View 1 (cartoon, rainbow, N blue to C red):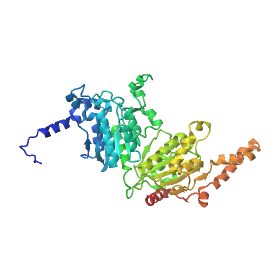
View 2 (view 1 turned 90 degrees about the horizontal axis):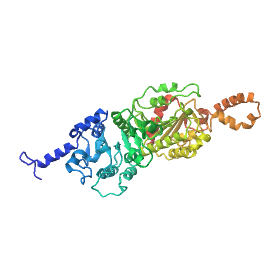
View 3 (view 1 turned 90 degrees about the vertical axis):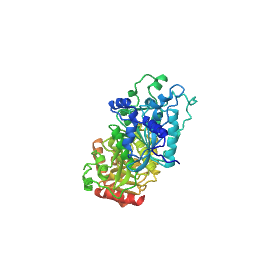
Length: 502
């Protein structure tokens, strides 16, 4: 190869740098300024904020929209850089990963045919290199205007199947901001985790497709707004803006790193006073999670969906974990159909990502009755049990207060002996069902024969007797659980067990 000298013609290199410049934000300052005026960041700005400086290896930056039959090539080079999808490999805090982003400033982030070829290529590379993937999916779905590639249906594009095949192979995080419809929404929905900003709209079809199907006229803001997609569980993590979304991605990726040697936590003696003295009184379980976890390591997921169950990513003494906990401030912590789905999804996520699970139990059991059954409780509850039973990652169970019935078993992978370790706090109670319900069921004939004035008094007396029988120490005496511990010991015992069980 001939070395480049001062006398060597630089025509090729000059053209390269000129063409490369046209793919940058600096080549479209007016568009970028209008975008910034809306409080938005460009695709390249989001990628640049996420990855380590200088680490991006980009694929397909020079492709243009396949529209040369109806537009000048020079126009396409300037107006359709990268065919509206930017992607490549990089590092984030030193961790190798892949990053893709649709570019809304190029034809509203729609999916062109050359762009599909690029996403096909990148998704295949992600699988081959086993890279965690972050996908900024804002965009309007398929693009009908490409003319250079013979098309009838375009249903043979591979990106959706290739992206779906990566489930369980690599972690996939989607970031949704602005409009995300049709194919873009499918890519977001197929990810393991979805992070969204308040201005996001996420739907299987945009306004044009809905109107074209004769289903009415709607504005983009009416289709899949955040208030709907958080309460139904589609969005896992809601953040305030794109900058916060990038920080959230970084936080989530940090849970994929190997266990550290240790971590700082608050005074563990505080755990002795976080539960109310009255075991019928509701309490917020989140401070318990935060006290057990390393400082500032908790990432809450699906907070608005099935709030009777809490799910989070965290670190305990440097060990990345998934945490599932009953939340007694909602429905007394009973496990509903939605909570069962939330738990099953989360346990499956922890299994795919290789995260140990810590389960904090305080539940009266599954929410039962005719209304609960109309929501498919049997199917959803069973799915939760199966997801827990199939965990191959370590599971540690801690019964904080109430561990009743099949709901408690589901929180523990199906049995108190399913986790690597099942412990209880001193004031906890365990039983095949709620204590008062157990009294009313087992003593039904005797109670029915009593005068009504005496019946409730008798129920109260018998319930207190059942309470003594159902104490954690009594359950430990017959070895239904492994130990009863001081709450202040919980973090150390969890960490020790997980370090030995990996």
